[in-house]
Length: 351
Length: 145
Image (cartoon, rainbow over all chains, first blue to last red; front, side):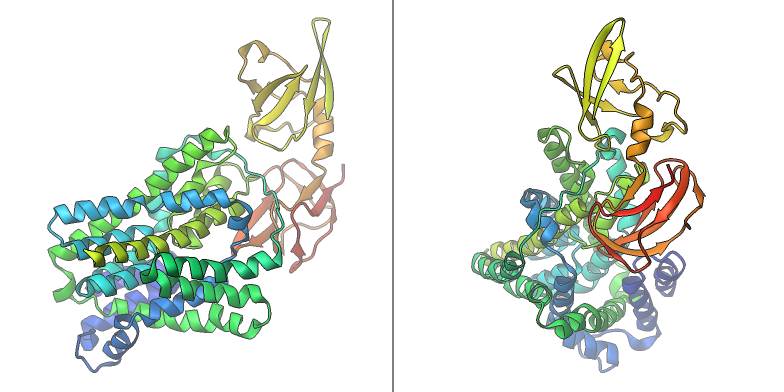
C-alpha cells in the first residue's frame, strides 16, 4: 500500500494530474500504513477528521459551497438545451447499478457504486454515507482517483466515438447577455425546486447554490472569496488526507474493493459514452452545428471535464474554442449528478 | 462577402457570410453549399488556395478567382474567440510569426487557451497588455498587412 500511495504522489507531483486531490490522498495512504489509519473508534488525528467530516457528510457539503462559487451558470443559461447533455451524462449510474446488483451487491451498495460514474466526489460521498457507509472508503477513493484520471480515461473514448470531422465542428461563442437578475435569482429558484422535488438532494443542491449565490449576489465578495479559496482548500486537504488514510492493506486489498474500482470505472465509461452519443444525436439534429465532444463533459467533474473537451477540440483545430459550450454542458452535468444522486437516494430509501 | 466566379463563360455569384465558420456556408446563385477547407494547408501567399472540397462533386473543380487576398485581409486582426483575461503575451510588435505560432494566452474559466496565428505575417500592433480582461471579438493584435 505504501507503493500505491507513492504512485498517487508520483502522479500528482511529476505528472500534475489533479495534484490538489491526489497529493493529499497519496500522503494519507502512506500515513495510514504507518500506523495512522482511520479506524471507527481510533483517536489519531485522521480518525477524528474522518468522523468529523466524512461520516457527518460535512466535507462534501463544504466543498460544494466552494464549487458553487466557482461555477458560472451563464453558459448554461445562455444555452438551456445543454441540460439534455447533463442528463445524458448520468445514464451510466443506472446501468452500473443493475450490473452491481447482479454481482451480488445489495441495492444500497449498488446505488452507491453507480454514483461513482458521475465523477462527482462530494455527491458520491454524500450518497454512500447515507446508503452504504461501509463502502465509503473505496467509493471515495474511486470517485476522486477517476476524477484526477479524467485526462487519461476520457480522451480514448472521445476519439473512438467521434469522427475527426465531428471534432472539427466549430462552435462560435455567441454571447447572449444573461441579466444580473436572472443570475441572482437562478440559484435560489433551483434550490427551492430541487429541494421540493428531491428532498434527499437538498443539502447538496443548497450548498452548491449557496456558493453560487454568494458570487452572483455581488455584495458579499469577502464570503465569496473565502468559499472559493480558504473553505474549499482546507476542506479538500482534509478530505483527501482522510480518504487516503482509509487505504490500509487489510481494508483495501480485497475483492470487493477491486470490484468497486472496476464497476466505478465502468460507470464512468458508460456515462462518458452516453454523453457522447447524446452529443452526436444533438449534433445530427442541429445540422452539424454542435460538436459532440461537449457531450463527454455532461458527466460532472466540474471543471476538469469541460476543460478537457475544449482541449480535445483545440488539439484538432487550434482556432476552435468550444470552452464556453463545454462549460455549459459541464455545469449541466454538475447539476445533473446532484439531482441523479438525490433521486437515487429517494428511490432506494423508499424500497 | 460576394465573389464572382467565371467558369467557362458562365458567371456564378458566390456569397460567403462568415469565412471563419466551419463548415463554411456558401451560397452559389441561390443554392446552399457547405465547404470544408483543408485547415492545415492555409496558403502562405497570394496563390490560389487548394481546391476546397464540397459535398457536390460537380462543383469540386470550382476555384475562387481572387479570394485569398481578401481572406487574408479579413484575417488581419486577431480577435478574442471567447471572453477572458490575457495572462501572457508571447510576441512583440514587429515580430514575424508563422502559422500556428502562439501569440498570447487567454485564460477563461480557469483554463489557459493559446491564441495562435492563423497565418504567417508580421505583428504590427499589440492592443492588449498582460492582465487585461477582454471581451468576445475584441481585437487583440493586428498584422502589418
